[in-house]
Length: 255
Image (tube, rainbow, N blue to C red):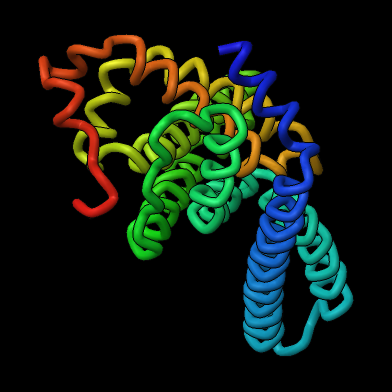
């Protein structure tokens, strides 16, 4: 696993990866900005409506007090939006990965495994669906974990492990589905669930680094391509559930 992480990091400086990095970071920033603007306007509209209702209820009395409360809540809402953007980075990068995973994986395979049969790119709709599904699940889990952040340490630990599980599953299956059917990729992940989860912890550590975490799709995809190569070759005769390896492989003309 350490060797796979080192290989993934070392390739991120290569010219092909720099091109993908610019595109993925640009898309991630665009999505985060749009989400931030949407949340800020939603909170602002709620504050205006609430203040207007209070003033109409009290016939304009305590106007100054309401203005102070509205200003205070607006500042807190802005800080909340910023904090929310930080928490949303794993979900956003998971969605971004669905657009660039095959391009990244192809570069890794060509560089490190030139003699192996190359993987087959996923249909765009299937890749995007995978990313959207993971992003939505991540949002749900994070919303459940946010209240626990008020409890020192507990929320942070839950958030980290939830991120590790979700991103480990997402990136491993994206890498595996280049060679296996979705059902087979899922079975392979379950067979090596502990190792995939530990790999997910490496990705969760990467995504916890501000600014650097915008490059998560590149690092995580490359990392899981290497891990998948090791796992799919570790038991050449038999894989999950006693299925022969040849049953997992999907030729390009079979898709």
